[in-house]
Length: 179
Figure 1 (tube, rainbow, N blue to C red):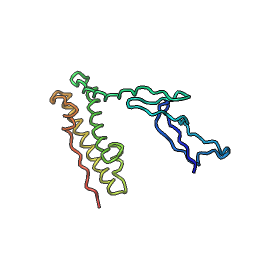
Figure 2 (cartoon, one colour):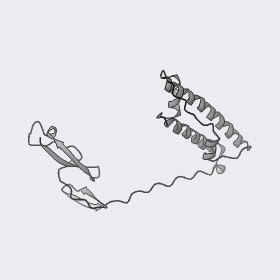
Figure 3 (cartoon, rainbow, N blue to C red):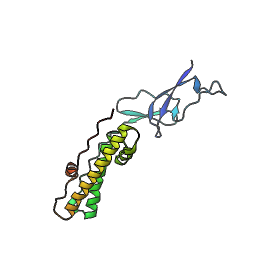
Figure 4 (cartoon, rainbow, N blue to C red):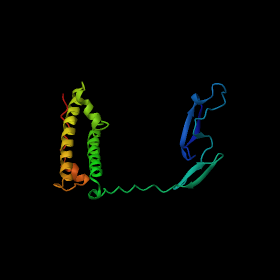
């Protein structure tokens, strides 16, 4: 069986690795011609030393320094809620609650809380139980959230941080899986 190795590059001509071709990659019209996949070249790259990468220049390879890895972005600090207008504070905190509910639903591979709740009418017993639990929890969470935000706006409760708000919400418990 005939084989041929070609060398894959990315959109910036950076070497990615070898690609093995077989007889199915030979032109049916020209038996001595290999059909080279897009993004591949026939020129073998040199041995690449540690800290370098190979860039195809159209005829051969240039070895350049590997760029330093990008550092993790610094987490955004929580906004100063006390300095926000009431509607901005409410929008921010309801966004925190929505994200919390979506992340909870994603624990079981639902797209988010909305997706989870749509399963309340499922004909699959497991999905229906999880969906109904999601509907009940969502209602309890939003009731608690809006009651708390109303109390904040009238000044009877201190503005909670995002973490404090999540801790004040009803917890979610996944239902037992029906047999």
